[in-house]
Amino acid sequence: MGLQNYLLKPPAPVSSSAPPLNSQLIVHSCSNIYSCKSNKKQTKLCNLVTSLGLHSHDGKRFTSVRRKGELRIVASSSSSSSNVPAPFWDSWAPQKGTQAPSLSDIFWPSAGAFAAMAILGKIDQILAPKGISMTIAPLGAVCAVLFATPSAPGARKYNLFMAQIGCAAIGVIAFTVFGPGWLARSSGLAAAIAFMICTRAVHPPAAGLPLLFIDAPKLHRLNFWYALFPGAAACILLCLIQEMVCYLKDNFKF
Image 1 (cartoon, rainbow, N blue to C red):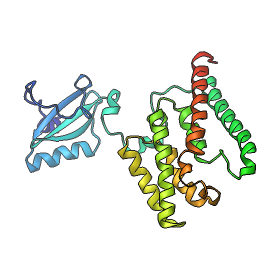
Image 2: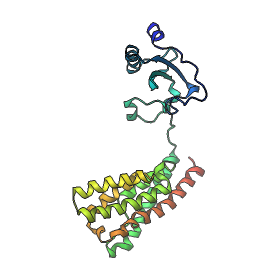
Image 3: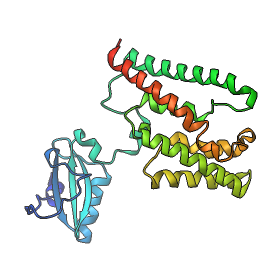
Image 4: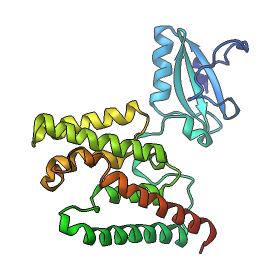
């Protein structure tokens, strides 16, 4: 306590007109804030407190935030974990505070994925004489996003169709400019990610569409029709199945 009292002292009252310290890091209802003047000696000691993972007397962890020449120490409770960067190893464990899924939460998304691939397989049989297919690998990832995490940003219809159409077109352009090979793959993937970020339509499965087009000779003859078929066209069917899966999950629990 002697070192802690030497380092940390309550901050001066801040007027309501002053900008917030950092709304992403501090929630005043569940955090205690201390500060120390930013001279070299005390800054090193404050950094030592946070780097060692020391906790306050009530079990809260110290983290440091710098503002206008002052180093502030934030003692945040575990309930505000979303506001404080988690330790590196936390990403290797299941998310805390989530309940185990029920049997219906597992069954309905899995059944939806089975139905989606079965329907697309039947469509493939019809399209087989033309040498094209509706069942492509990225659609498996689309099923996982739409059925297992329907509330995730990647499952938004805007993200889904904007990314599917845009990334597929980028794959065609990359192949046209660079031909088959590593340069087309790398530039196509980079451009697809940049496109999704710029349009705020991040949909991870769509990143595989440029690679699929470049490495699949049977798709080359589609040219820019590849932007609509098979990815975007199949996603219409998957969105319809998603609505059924969500309805069944909400109304038929077991």
